[in-house]
Length: 459
Image 1: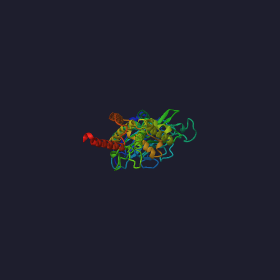
Image 2 (image 1 turned 90 degrees about the vertical axis):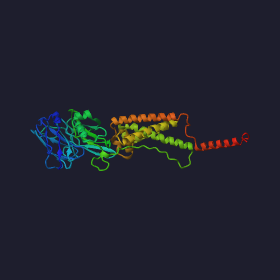
Image 3 (image 1 turned 45 degrees about the vertical axis):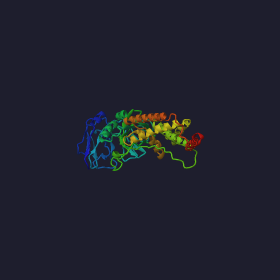
Image 4 (image 1 turned 135 degrees about the vertical axis):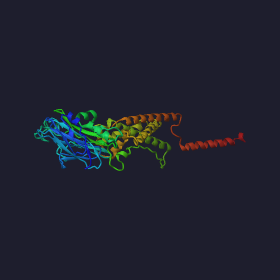
């Protein structure tokens, strides 16, 4: 086993009513908590690291139903009568030193027990949040909670009744916390993870995304943000006793720190590069119709961007738009509306398209070097078109310093580009003349010049 560095946050324990702290030395593989208060009925001991796995166990010998391995893992210890000390065993298989933060939290008999009704995972009581991600979405899963109970008594029956003494009254609040942009450091992650372990901290620092009842599936999906650190946690709340408890938070960067190619450190920012290119039509078609089709094609692209921006706002997370039919009809309607509105002034439409789309290409270029959420304006739409399950994900993204700066640059470039084009087009024909007309005018001019020279006054 490699070296395991352990930090026990005794200050968190004392704030929850546990007297004393933990013992852990640099080479120790066990953590001991002394002087546990008699009004504490259960403990949640959790350990966190950036990407290196750590195993936490009730026993020195690892057992599948008494240990957990991962980067964000915890165990619930149900205390016996008169018990005032608790021990956990820690191991790592990683050859390199593993930097961890461990947090013991205490709860009373009135507090709900996170994961107390687990029927899916290995542990009998599992307070962990299980996280999976791919290019499209990040999904979290957790086991339902159960009601708390006093030391030495039997736990409440899981699925009996639906009143005040049943777990079906419990409510689950899912929270999300974004780390600073472009920061993949271990120190920053562990520091911010400590802000997401206690109920009061989670409510103060994170944003509540969704509320689940006992009738809902304990699974929530979010849009993946490669390279952006995100911490998730769930608060289970008893509305009758007004007590609550926090699950073990889970974090992700939606990328791998261990991969040789394409890891988090060398990750090329995901950019949606929107192109609209006009191909010359080889089939016979009138020149005026050709130009009109070009204008319409450009306007459709502008409509696509405007529609994407509309659903990039909180409007896109409304429940009604989780239905693919409603979403795509509304999205297409906005796309088509733009050409219809500007059909009478195609020159302005083309200038607006060039100004807005050209400046947005700068946003995509910036995202290739410096992360910005604005690149997901169009990326979310493409993800929804390619992934049939993306409709259920929450797509609201962080808006931090880089995003405000990029948004300001996008606006200034769009306004300046549109202004310059309008000034440059003053006094110019609506569209460039037809090539035949140019050739015909040139032929007439040459003919007039020839006949003028052949006139008697020049002989």
